[in-house]
Length: 434
Ligand code: ACO
Image 1 (cartoon, rainbow, N blue to C red):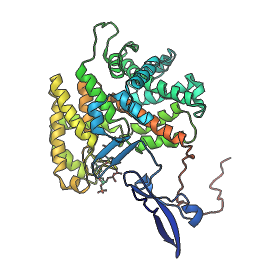
Image 2: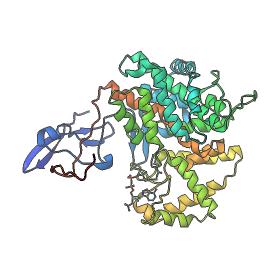
Image 3: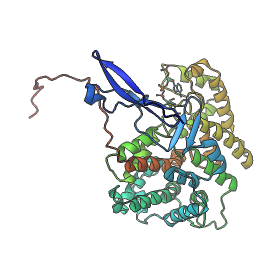
Image 4: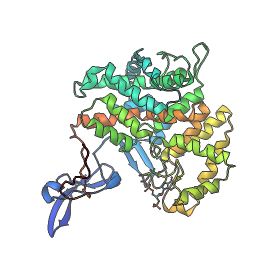
């Protein structure tokens, strides 16, 4: 292959030309490397919401928002969702390659080895009032793991320590999510069964009653859950992954860093949208099912309502995950024999929005969260648990992003600003405060 000449970009500022290198990624993505901009010109860039800013180079996930492409380590999301299980995808994200049989067995066994959580952790639940949101609890529980594993406080301690923390997080997250659910019901927790695979174990801890010795997760549900977790496993520099990289860049430990990622995910504009979507669909149903009324509300600039599960910062054609989920949703409901009226409303809403010029002009399409809640609901999860399930799926992605950032010794993340406040002024005594 002929070697391509490195390109430069010329920027003219105050009548002077400055050259900056152009970086081209393996998929042809182009960036102007402005890391020396301030030193050489005195200027910084301003990009509120980071709409045009590449915060890092990364080898983990590629997505093309215009073409609706999503690949992890080169493998298409369609192939992964169809042919892999969640732990294989987790391995791929973390280690860069799909595991062979021995590698998978060893990874799986290591995770099974760490599924229990310290009994004392259960005391923390006693401090949460009834009805506490699962995401608030999840943040606290994951952060509290740092108290139980103080050797993880130094994220650079050793590769072995990093691997152990990674395994502990992957192994304990399902246990903690299931505990949160059980505690919300006032039921005793069900301990992990390490003879079960990752997803079956999670479903068993969640839905088995302690006294029910016959419980077995439905293979249809295991399959759907694997798919859902895979579809959420990573999404390059999204809000929560960027949070993980930023918090981790201060050398905070991985438990605290992951808790920060969970906090970022909770917001309704990010992962919290899956709960909001179902609440919205229920509200439309309770309101008589007049879909157009809600589409009009979303278009009304005097109304803060948005169609939840619609729109995406980077996907401007379609979200490939939403396509897969929509089909999975139909399959699961059919296989489980469930006729969910909310699905009909979702389909009508999608149709109404996709033919409306407001949504067409703004390139607003259903995102990953639009249909996921309907599957979670058919499996039996309450709406408030939905975002915790997203967090369970996203965990390997966060850790992979963190590993890459730490492994490359990236500097602390610290953006600049353009100050627009008061210029210096003399102190004014505005009243006797003594
Ligand atoms: N309903 C109605 N209008 C919308 C919606 C929506 N869901 N999303 C965007 N718009 C409109 C905006 O009002 C804006 O209109 P304007 O140009 O007339 O001002 C235009 O479309 C562009 O929207 P922005 O908010 O500027 O786009 P941005 O990229 O900043 O936001 C986001 C993307 C946050 C996902 C947005 O589309 C949204 O709020 N969607 C609903 C929440 C949601 O589903 N979030 C999950 C995203 S996927 C994930 O994180 C897993």
